[in-house]
Image (cartoon, rainbow, N blue to C red):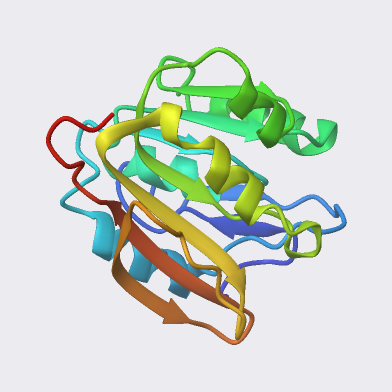
Length: 192
């Protein structure tokens, strides 16, 4: 990463070069610049006008990068109070309050709550030690648009399959993590 300690940057779009704080919080592991660059190259055709759900927002690097590159709106979910506060300050600094909403909540609890609408793109990059991929994947369906995209980040060699209902689109690995992008499989006629 080519950034100062304690900061990462938005790497493309409207807010390119904007630095995001990286508080010292256990389990916080922002997606690297290189991995984000690759991911957003994969996503570029999908981003214009997309509604984005960033379930473990952390620094906001994924959700805010999506907004910077043309997504219509983002719901940034973060349970850690310090990270949520830093996210709220960043959204205010970017004058993005009309497009980005920070929700201080546990991701699993949020998925059981009333819907905030359906999302075109969901980022799932939880703290690796918590093993939350499957419970999150189990609760996502009501939150998804028919042709939704899903990004999963997981420990480097292990990988986490998205499961039934998802078609693999692209994947890659960095030294520390696996990166996989999936597209929601079309439903069979008459199935809900």
